[in-house]
Image (cartoon, rainbow over all chains, first blue to last red; front, side):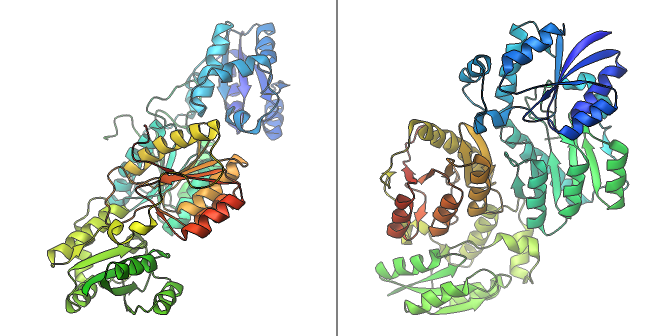
Length: 276
Length: 276
């Protein structure tokens, strides 16, 4: 069995990545990040038969040596990892300090790209998330029973254009719109908080759009839609949640779609050729 | 005395506009908007010797006829007015319905521009806010004692560029940044809520930047910095509040600057020639 590394960040994505690797006949060497990885995720990984080693995100050299000792040639990063380091000032080793010192901008993608280059320099290739998570990519079209109304369809297009512009600025992936107006834009607060804020300002009936950066690096930070996203949509009484068929991971697919259907929410996977 | 109209929206700006008109030897005919104008503002206007007539924002024809009967040739709009109409569905007369029906996008500037065109068609010119509010434009430079640090200066430049891009998309005027990262972007929730959100995510030391749209129409929606803005900056433990010297109104200037000084916050008025 080929050995690949997996750096497990926040959320449920690392579990899916480990399962995806196993399906591909690959043995994942999993590293939990002390500051980021949810203990519940580690438990779920253990329950599924995986073992998890732990290291602090600040100890980049130790992380790299761990993978080198385990003889992995490829690593997948799954789940959010990284940005808080810069803000909260955890203890950093010389390797991480050097990586960060070389950065002009310190947005998510810049940090992750620098980490990928660091691993590459030490003979470890960071592999695309989509390779091990292809089973989570939604099919194109409306995934729920209710097709968007003409007004909602117009807002999906407007929100898609706006979200792409915002994502291109490396600000965030999500916007909430209604009647051609932008109600909320995601920055560092995260998608769920953005949906709740925008949905409440809309007074119901909002359209949420989450997109990939137009220059998306498929190795990390691909948009994720999960139970908490749909819960936020329901709580804020929004009407539509749209995302990209080829660049969004849909977690707990059946349950998520069933939940949306029960609340009359349209989940819409927009195709690559969606007109701008 | 020449007679000009004043449509009084939210906040303290209409009082300043009325005072500015009086200083110019112009008699303001003031209209309060039932849905928007703060009763406390009306009281302050009354106390300053102005009278206020009232009309619903939905009754655009009645507003226009009121100004025509008062023989005003120019009208100033001061204080936020407009966008909520589209969302909350107040009763609209035929005139307003026609104005809104002609709009492609329903962002703030589009609505205000359409209203200005409606008034112009009926012989009433909407005058620039800066004409009657020039006394509120801050001078260039650091208005408080503490000059920004090198890191803060870099974040002001980064935030300025980002805010200009966001404003150009007609999303909002403010961003909160720290260490080259965008923490919060303003959409419809308003500046104060954006500052509080971004400042809390920063854990102190954030830089707030509020800018005019690069295609700013000087007749309406020029950025306003007031006591509540500085209070939000203080509450969120941000370090700097930057805005544009030629396109930002500073309300209660002396008190606002004194408050910022007492909290070691830098208020920075950036000049037109601020490098991009």
